Length: 357
Image 1 (cartoon, rainbow, N blue to C red):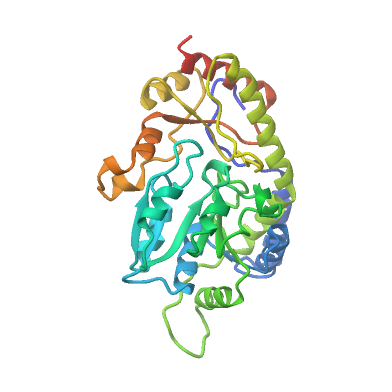
Image 2 (image 1 turned 30 degrees about the vertical axis):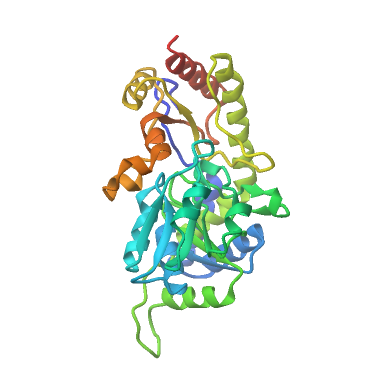
C-alpha cells in the first residue's frame, strides 16, 4: 500500500479466502447451501446463542426480525439518531413508526434517559447499536423491559462482562450483524440474525425460505450465497486476530495522540471495545479536517453520514449530542491490514492536524 494514499477502510483478505471461494466454485453449488449452514453453526458457537440465520445483508436480518416479532403498523421502534440510515429502512418496511432519540455524549450510544422519555405502550422494540464497537449500557436498558434488538454491525467480537462475560449479540431478545466489505468480517454483502428464541427464529427462517412452499404468504429472497459464506468462514477464523490488531492500532493512536493533547475515544469500564472505528473530535470543521488529512495522504470520513433526525426533519433541538457528534467527529483509518509504519504515520499527521501544530 502506498504510504501517500492510505484509504479510510479496507477489507483484510488473503489466500485463505481465495481458496475457500475456489472450493465453492469447483463444487458448482454457489447459491445458499452447505457453506451457509456451516457459517450459521460457526457463528452460533462463537456467540454462544441457540439459533442463527444467515442473510444477504444486515438490513435484511433486521427486516426479518421485525416481521418475526410482529412489529407493524401502529407500533413504534426506538432507535438512536446517530446511526446509518440502513437501520431506519426496515422499520419503515414493516410500517412501524421510528421513535428517534438522542445519544449519550460520552460513549455515543443510545441515551438511556431519552429512551425512558419515549417509551410507551406502543413501543414494541428498542434497537441498541453498539456504536463503533463500544458496547452500550445493556444492563440498564434491559431493566426497561422492552424487547432489545442488538445492532452488532460494528461490534462483532466485543463483550460485556457485567453480563457474565457474554459476547455482544447474545444479551437482548435478538441481534443482527452485517458482513459488508468494511465491517469486522467481510463477505462483500451479507448478514446474520441471532437469538435464543426458537419461536422468533422459526418465523424468520420461514420468511427467508420463499420458494417451493405449500402455502403462500409474502416471503423474502434474502438468502446468503455459499460464495459469501465461504469468505465468512475464512474471516471467522481470523476474527480474534482482527480484533487484537485493531486494539493494537488503537493503543498506538492513544499513545501518540495523547502527546498532542487530544482526547482519545471513550472506553466503557469492564467492556471490550472492538474498535470498528477510531473517532476523534476536531476543533475545526469536519470538512476542513478531512481536507487537511487528505492533503497528507490520509483518508478520513464522517463515521455517520447524516443523523436520522435530520433525514426525518425532526427538531434538531431535541438531539444536541447527535448534532455535536455530526458537527465535530471524524473517523480515521483502523483496520488489520495497516502496517505499523502506516499507523504511526497516520497518528503523527492526525495529531498535527487536530492540534493545529
